[in-house]
Length: 153
Image 1 (cartoon, rainbow, N blue to C red):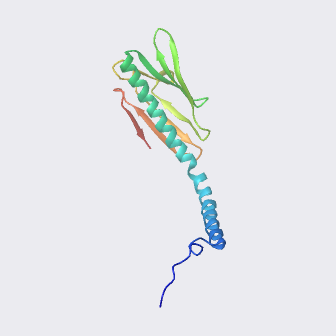
Image 2: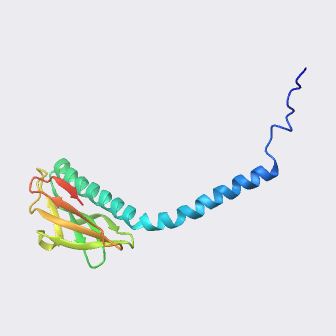
Image 3: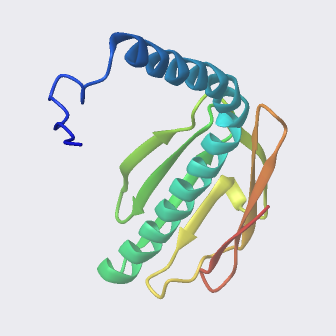
């Protein structure tokens, strides 16, 4: 018995198979959208904390590198913060705003809501910054006297 080679036409998807595949992908996407919306505030809180910690470390590095005080000023009323150079005059290096799902919950230990790093990399005052999201999840950022920045949930 001689077997014939399958033709190229038989190797392709039929329109029915393609329609079933597209339907399955669509159902999976529809199931995933509500799950994404549930986790979005947590993802945004986590991303905001990472970015703020990175900016605190950036201000510390600038202070050490340039031998001038640098700091981060927090505005809890507007959910913004600024990276500032404290030279002969104050110079705002950058300003960032939190996403709408994230805000300041509490800032303690920092006079004037500022974390100021000296040329040795230490902060003038240690403090804790607590961020909260719309699901009432909080994350704390602990700034130690040595300039070490630690995140705790």
